[in-house]
Structure formats: C-alpha cells, structure tokens
Image 1 (cartoon, rainbow, N blue to C red):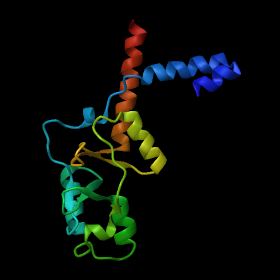
Image 2: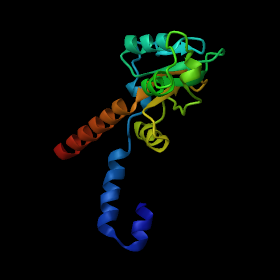
Image 3: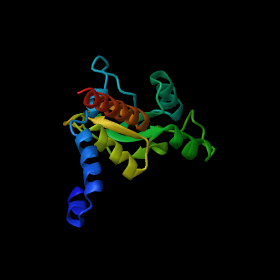
Length: 167
C-alpha cells in the first residue's frame, strides 16, 4: 500500500501508513499470550457429548473447546455459537449429542510464532472468533479468541506509543 501511494505521490498518506507500519513492527507473537505454566488446553474427544464440552468451557472460562481426533490432532472446534445453532436450535439433546456432530471441522490454526496481527487477520478474513494454537508438530498448545488478541494488540500499541512519546 505504501508503494502504491508513493507512486501516486500522496506523501501525507504515505507518511501515515509508514508510521502505522513502524508501530506494528516487532508485534508480539501469539505464544506470548499463552500461559507457560499451564499445559492444559480446553479439549474434548470426538465422542464427548455437547454437555461435556459445555462443562469444559465452564471449567476453563472460555466459549470454545478443541475437539481432538484419535491421533490427538485437532479435528474441529466447538463454540457456544455451534451449541446454540446446531444443537439447541435443532432441538437435539446435549446429553447424547456428540461433539463431532456440532463442531466446526478443520478450523484455521496458528503456531505460537504467528504474530498477534496475523492471528487477528485470520479471524477477520474467516469471520470467526476463536483460533487454535498448534505446535509445529500439530499438537494443540492453546486456544485464543478475538477479544484476547485485540486487547493484547491495543496494549502493545499503547505501550509502544508511550515509549516513543517519552523518548
């Protein structure tokens, strides 16, 4: 975008975009949001019931759980929206409906090395609210949501602005 504006000769916009690009450089990664002390990720198996998944969400204070296949790889994600639209609205019984029936299969994922900005971009493009975080080997290491990512990005930008304002 900066190159296009430079070619057009719009220097004010070029400077503004350059300033934003500078602020974003060094953006923290998704791994910085994960608790290094906790090895627990909200997850259930394909055979778990929707009720069990909802209990897991309650236990972890989250609105989504990862659904793992037989190989402990992420097969899907089950969110509160999935429960409302695919279970309750369809009048299925959460006590006997399996997570695999209600989950969103094959969700987009990120690695801990992905920047917060990259993760937010994936969420925006895909129009969803949760993003599994997988190790390079494909094992789940976390689950982030749009609010956590947004607050972290805003905090980063505010802190960065405060550092440059004091310099």
